Image (tube, rainbow, N blue to C red; front, top):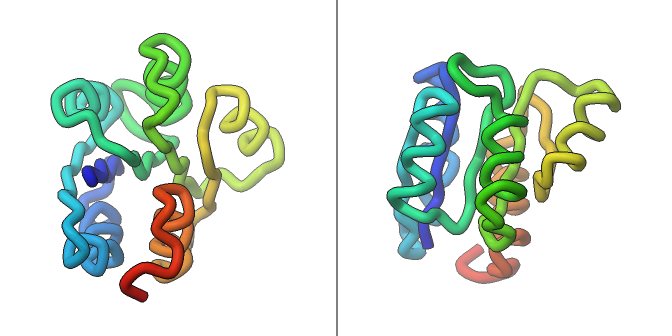
Length: 128
């Protein structure tokens, strides 16, 4: 299992990586990217099962990255969690429109993020 973490803030990438350490123990490989263009390159190169994707980033925002992956590249099996400070209903609807599997707002509970990832990847209850 491969998971890509995309956020332009290094401390948030690190926080998310730390939250996902249990998944690494279960065999997950973690990759990171710091902007939307890097995210698309990493998705093309590593073909992750899941992407934790910030919305507000330089070069390409998370909505655009999600749209490219899900709609232009047709990677419907790549699960995408949009993780953002933008919690307005309009933004959540936009996330749904571009094909995001889940929309979570910052600040987030790391344990809840891990639970949501397990749910999306069909690992609920494993190695809890």
